[in-house]
Length: 334
Image 1 (cartoon, helix red, strand yellow):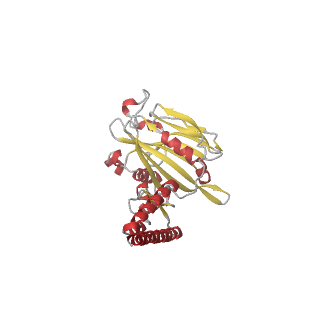
Image 2 (cartoon, helix red, strand yellow):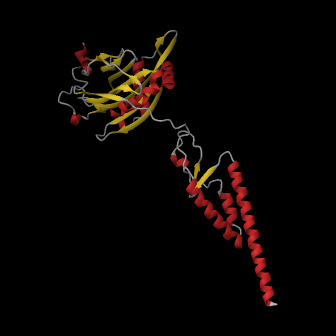
Image 3 (cartoon, rainbow, N blue to C red):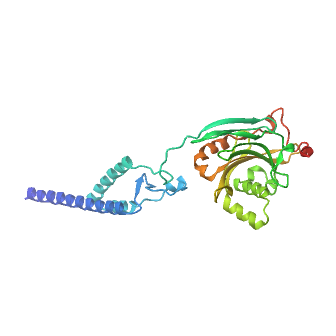
């Protein structure tokens, strides 16, 4: 009798285990199919959420969120089953987690198609000892071959041609390609407005761009200047080199500057600005501006940014022996 009772107990135990296993498989399959059918399917890697599609410009700190993923509620439900069912559920989840780790692919930060990088180009190099700055410039950008002509040789600020009617902005160096209408120019001007009241460490690229371009624009009204800045100027990177000099990059457009046939074609410019004190301690802004027709922008953009990153203004303690401060002999232009 005891042997028979023991046999019945074993049979009931095996039956209960089989039913529990079947129930776990059904629950797990239902959860997996609901996740697969969801339009925002996500993959769990060590309790971190990795969306299969990430919006452009989303910080990585938000992409790899610490919040539970969509599978968390299913995992909690299965973990709550007692006895044999709970053990089997834990085994299944461990196996699935391992499978997820092996098959998961971290999505890139941007959702745009991956396009092979274009060759940046070939470069020349210019170093001006008079104002003690240097940069490299594209002589070939992508598939655009440039035949550059030096239209303004490097010269000191006091004798350089003015760019605006207020005489503050002056062209101290310029080269251009007539065929492609590409221009590389160095401008120098004193710090004005908000840039004069605060040190460069407190500036932003947008403030630098707005102040310099608005002063150069000679707008007829405040409203006209504000509208131009909002529609055509975008601040970019701010960085500091090993000498402690701050650099500010920004892009700006010049709508309708070139006319071919009946349709005006605008220009796209990339500029980088750095500040250095003159002989009396007041700051002067050194700006490298590189511009091309809008239709060439995407082709030339990588090379132009590489050139902008190469721009350096020597600190006062290491300027060239030929260096002439911008505020020396200000009457020389006359």
